[in-house]
Image (cartoon, rainbow, N blue to C red; front, side, top):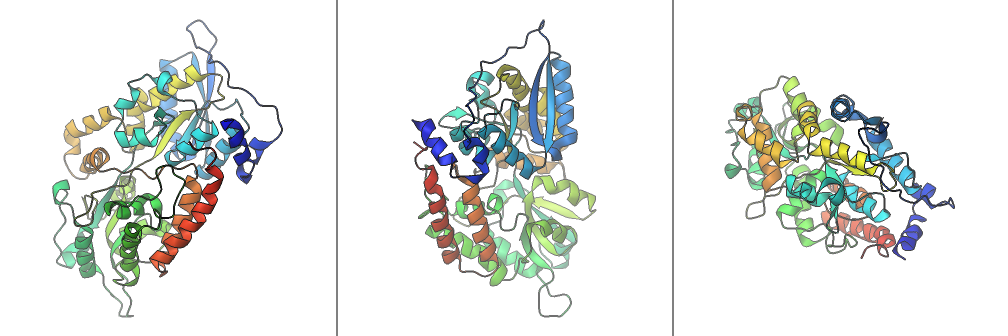
Length: 443
């Protein structure tokens, strides 16, 4: 009955149109077991094309260790990748075995029946080997549906030259001495300047990297104990527009419109503003480090800020990997997922890609390795600590894309001067209307 309900919902989603056709349904097949004497099993893995070099190294090492399993690596840009997954798995195609999962989409994929639960395939103790925020984000109804390839975290980069010029002390890199948002505003006012005399600031005290994006901005509201959606992920009114959310995004508005200490720029422009000296304090993912280093700038790092008297919260979440429900080679696929997320492949992925690990073992290695004690490598030690202690996942909902698209638009409008309460009220109303289609399929 539940399955029938889901098909009814699917019919209303244009993207999934291929999955709602009248084709005969292919049923999940028994797993094929690779053995030493059998012909090689080939599994197909759909991955993000931006990972080409590091993921090929993981695949090469896996095939060397598992000569009876070949990996057909298919690479796709992020937007096409998500679309391909929807089309292939909605039509119950059997030619994908391992898929890349943008972790906020896990619940939706699980409800649609796209993913094979991993607990039995990876072993009961697998979940205890990753940090809780990554395990929780990749699980639905207590079952692990997608295993974390890595995690992510955000730190405060600062331009030492601009701080010295303004006579501002460098912030501490110790988590026990992190800045409050109130400190950030006070300092950013000193750092903002009109250098060409046109009456407008052209050097700004502070900027987010992901301007207008939920991944980074939700931490503002979560520091004020806001809960962006209901527990079942189906109600936005009273959550997305709660007083705590409105209060947090009034602060966000004031950065641009009252204090004028943040530039009204697009996300794509933010890093260039920092490395060109137009922004002094820059809150950004650790994965920005290579470009900041390559720019040759004089910079430092500090922990993520929080509101005075509020909760310390940092953004997290990244790509996970799952096994298609319709794969006919689930055991071979599980071997690859285990290798990539917990085995030798997870170390290769970290060494080659540089993303913050979700594996506790790798995070422990960062803590113990002396090379992560000194700047700038200590950014990984700081991020590892945040991932363990302060990371807060984004909300779970089968309609994550609908929620994110509407709140991102509200955040953009707020940046440009819209009243925060009205923008969030409007977003909550739209989200609730769009989430109605999922109500019959969520218990």
